[in-house]
Image (cartoon, rainbow, N blue to C red; front, side, top):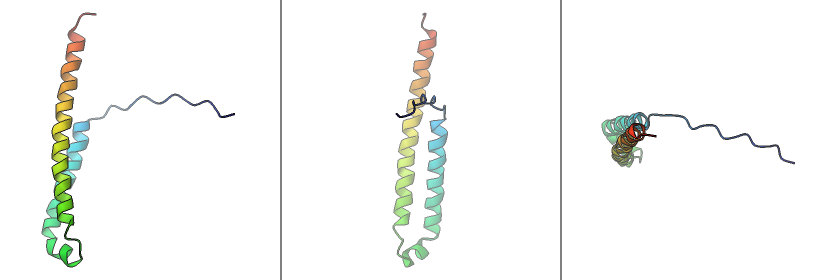
Length: 86
């Protein structure tokens, strides 16, 4: 007989904007490094790393735009809920 399962823990409160912004900054650093080392990367057959870093930066900017909009919407909805009478 299987042991009874414990209840799932409550989700952690995180700052999605900070997480996505950190990742986007890391992709920007990776892009800068790959641009500086471009000749060496091409010689080693890894010239496409520049495009990978550029794609990561591009998707990070889109993600940052998305999570900022979501956070603003959640703040607005939260304010409406607390302002409404019970």
